Length: 175
Image (cartoon, rainbow, N blue to C red; front, side, top):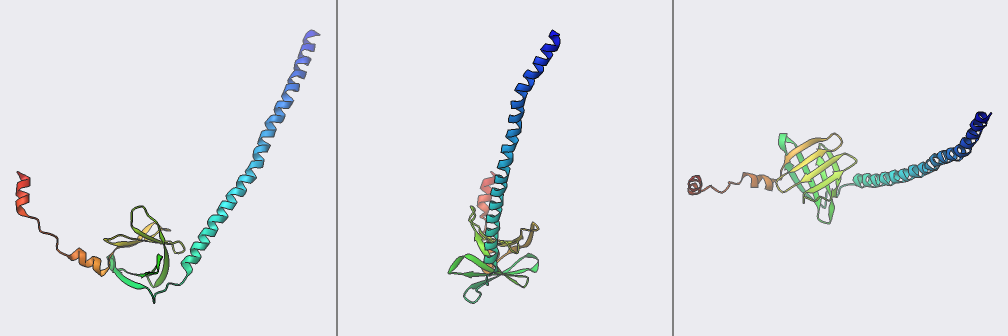
């Protein structure tokens, strides 16, 4: 009889302590479940902001290029490709570009290297201009579309003869 009584007492004690512990265990996930909708709402707000920024960018890309008041630079690229860049002195943050019978408006993206980088998110094109050459990249496909694009001034500098090497310096360096 004592063993039955002890077993019964042990069972009551376990249920007395287990019920609050079970209630706490189920309360925690409910609290987390309440925070998940908040996290989802926050993520949705962030996505809406990014979409509105992309829409603002795409509407910026859709504007007409003012070719009449811009200076045009025709560039010859490798493989016979041609690119025409339209720069406006009044608007340093955008350029126009004629590529494959399309006239694109591209906006400047800041770089740490000093290269001129312009993008058209709508078309997925990136123009990178450095003093020696320019290149057009397709960011959607991850390809170079045009490379070794040079203006007439850059081509003239490339064709200019280099300074001759003085033979006496070569002989002294070998000794």
